[in-house]
Image (cartoon, rainbow, N blue to C red; front, side, top):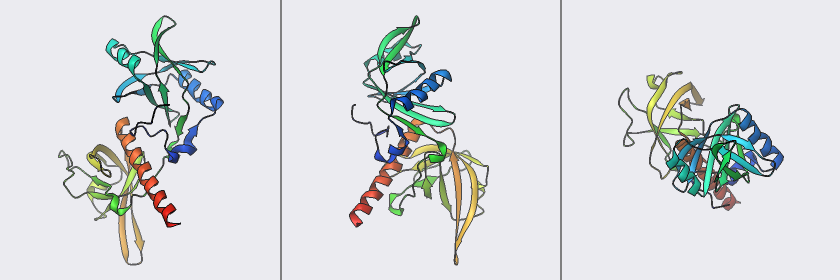
Length: 255
């Protein structure tokens, strides 16, 4: 398999417990994608060009058949790519896998592509979305917009207390901040990740509560991402696993 693209964290050790590598386990998931006619968001490598597709058939000979695009130009790009990273959902569970070198073919009289089964398949349930607490020096902040005014990364941001692929929690200076009333959606925010360009995100406030330790009072708001783009989620997951790797490396050095 070609080296992993950093925007598609499928080979990271932090994800190992979510990986399926047994052919029987992967076959059950892949065939379910065919049965449910699940829409797959594909990313062509190199280039990270997006293309929608679907699984048409899963063969016992270790091959998969993918639907082709209606755009001939996009089909030509698929035919020349070295990898196709597939992202979809099955019963609200995120599924991601990488296929190598899809080849054009005809399937039941229609244009399609054939590829070998993936070497591994990521099955990441929402309750298992990996969550980290960014260290203070990581500089992970959320910059909310103000009404119709978009956020600016130059504004003071709110410290992100924990982060996952599904949402985040932020520290609040004012427990009565009307922007973070439960149920409210902030659709023009920027998420600042370590050493990266800020990502536009929208969040819905799930809850707001107070933590008190002795005389110290701290407010926090838990938020869910809304309609998060696959590219944005990949960048968030990459940062999560990078933070976790750095934390594990520090712990190993301390032992």
